[in-house]
Length: 125
Image (cartoon, rainbow, N blue to C red):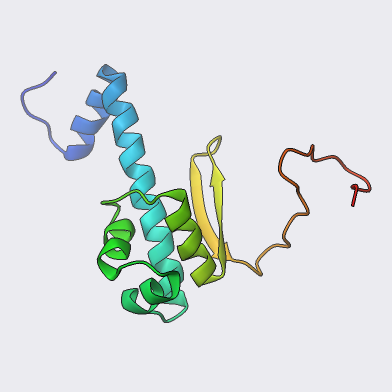
């Protein structure tokens, strides 16, 4: 480990290569920041303030602020409330390391039942 680095990126690159636990923690922080930023962008696109979205979602404005800044990871139930209030869906792709939030009308909702295999062709009613 060097004593001094030219940039923060130099430090982060060396530490992630040296320490797998550091790399995993950095990735987790990045995901929280990315999720919060996506939610904030969707809220802003809809012309909502944090207070308005928090009221619609039934959560506090300070909690929404912490989530949008990446300082708090929301429970699934809280995330669900926020997404419903935004009328949006969340796309997670761990294979591509992508998180995105989009309006619910952006893609058709799949007809998938929990526990049922997703197969082409007619699905049971």
